[in-house]
Length: 357
Image 1: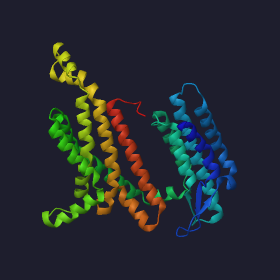
Image 2: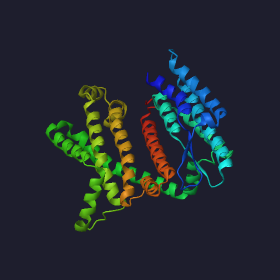
Image 3: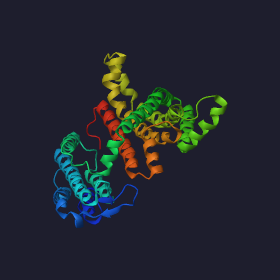
Image 4: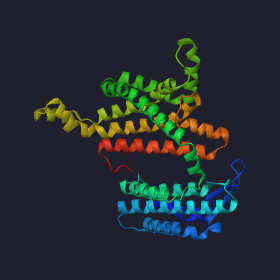
C-alpha cells in the first residue's frame, strides 16, 4: 500500500501542485506556476513514467530491483528536464533578472518517489542519475533554475562548508567510536555498571544540542577553552554519538553465543582466526546498526554547529534564513542529505551489505 500511495503521488503532484515559482526580481515575492496550465506538453514524459511506476506498484508479481532503479532514474530525469526547460521559457518572457525556484510540487513528487521505492535505491539508480545529471549539465538544461544559479554563485563556499561538515561529523564519530565501543562491549558482563553508563549517556541525549552549546559557552570563561568554533562543536557531537555506539556494541556482544566460541576453540582456531571467521559475521550487523545510527545522527546534529561559528552546512542554512534565500537553505539541506546518504553507503559497503532497505 505504501508503494501504491507513493506512485499515486507521482501521478497527482505534477497536476495538482505548482512545480515552479517565478520571481521577477530576487527580492520580490514568488508567484507559483502550475506546469499543467503553463507547460502541459512538458508534463507528458513525467506522467508517462509516473503511470508506469503506478502500474509497477499495482503489479502483483515479483519486483525486479534493477527495473525499479532504472524507472526511478527515468522519473527524476524527466522531472529535471521538465523543470529546466520550463524555467528557460519562463525567464525568456520575464527577463534576465528573473529567478525560477522549485515549487511545492517538486517536494511532493520526491516524497512520492521515496514512498514508491520503499527502500534504498541501488547502484543502477545512482549511476543512471549521475549520467543524466552530467548530460543535462553539459547541455545546460538546468542553468535557468535559481537553485543551480545559487549553487554556482556559492560554489566555493558550498565546497568548503561541505568539507567542514564532513570533518566535524567524522571527527566526532571517530572520537566516540573507541571509548563507547569498548564500554559497550566490556560492560555486558557487568549489568550494574552497564545500566549506570547507559542511563548517563541516555540522559545526555535528552538535553537539546543548543543547551549543550550554551553550557560550553558559559564554561569557556572558567576553563579558558573556546566556547565557539569547531572544538565545542566536536565535543558536543562526540557526546551525542557515544550512546548509539555504546548500545550497538552491547547488542553485538549479546548476540555472540558462548557455545560458538567454545566450538571454535575445539576446532583449533587461533584467536584472530576465531574472531575474523566465526565471531565477526555474527556481531557485525548489530554493531554496524549502532554505528549507522550514530553517524546519521551526528551528520544531522552538525548542522547546529553553524550557530556557534563551527562552520559546516548549517552556516549556509542559517545564512539563507537570515537573508531570506530559500535556495541557500535548500543547498545546505541537500548537502546534508547527500552526506547522510554517502555515510550510510560507506557503512553498507564496509559491512558487505548491499541489500539494505
